[in-house]
Image 1 (cartoon, rainbow, N blue to C red):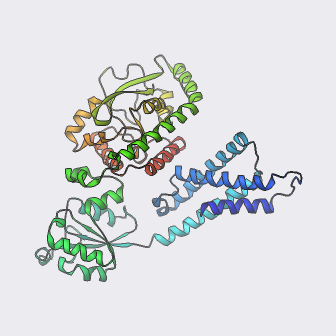
Image 2: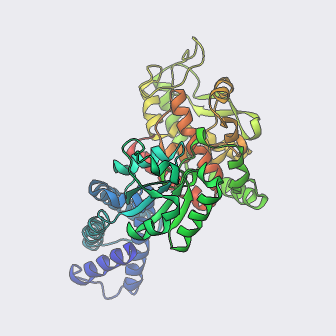
Image 3: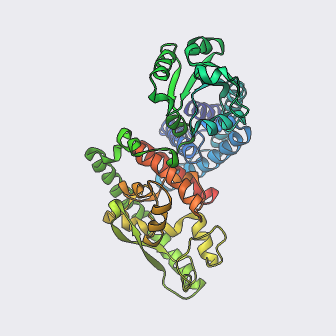
Length: 443
């Protein structure tokens, strides 16, 4: 839809705002086609960078407007650079303005209409049984944190229903034997089965009955994972890893990911060479000390490697011992703060990727002195090392800097989601969203 809107806006601009055409220019039709291709591609890539195509965008009007504006600004800049500096072609400013203005008005307008249409559409959600996650799911749905769902209630056994007591303030709508009739009566579209209940035959039969009615049926862990984009580490067992079918462990996926890493790292090092020189000069001007900073980090399968970064802290930052970096860490220099916000301090890790120590996308590598205590406190923390660590990752685009055990647990939940769902498509999405942090500030 966006491609059609951009091309339509450019065509309208060419039709109504170009008042003089050089009749001797035989490339005029070609230039219009080229402008359409470059501007439309820039809009799609910029939209992906700023999350315009994420389903959550449609649930907030402010998010729609903000991301459309960011997309248009980035697309216009990219189009000007590509056409003028690389293709030696020009695009009429009136035509370009017509294209982006038409896109901004129509694309944001259509999305706002979609927002008005879907905000009142609520899929009926029925919960079967009680489990450690069902309470969190129910509370999130009731307070609107999980948009698009309407809580129907809880289904329990005959014995529990006879007591006629609600679970907290959650209504019990019926017993397990009447689940089909309840699904029809309350127009249920999705059913969540508590993990403990799923092991009992009567609950299994009820879940199958719901499937035959056309309902989507999942257990509580799967629903939580797909809804929040993270794995609840406190509520899974080793069986989760056995059933997850981790795609990163397949040889063909590992080879494709390595080729992807080598291409991105090589291209990145070539394109960022001028940035390296500028950043090195700024660090030297900001104070004494080396430009590059190295640390030992834990990689795939627990192997250690030396990670490289641009120095962002004062020279004696850890004279009192190792400590997590915080959001407003006083040890960070003025230039270092700028480098961290733009993530330019991570650029030297392209060399780590080329060497094979790291991947472009994956869990961020942690220091050995932190991994030991965290592994003892957080279940399955070591399993984040099943794949190579990354320059960026799912946790980096979805969560802020971590400076506590609670933060480490939350980031692990996001990392395990990536470990399970790793794929080149997801890598591209994460990479594009990471580029957006250059404009919006790093997480």
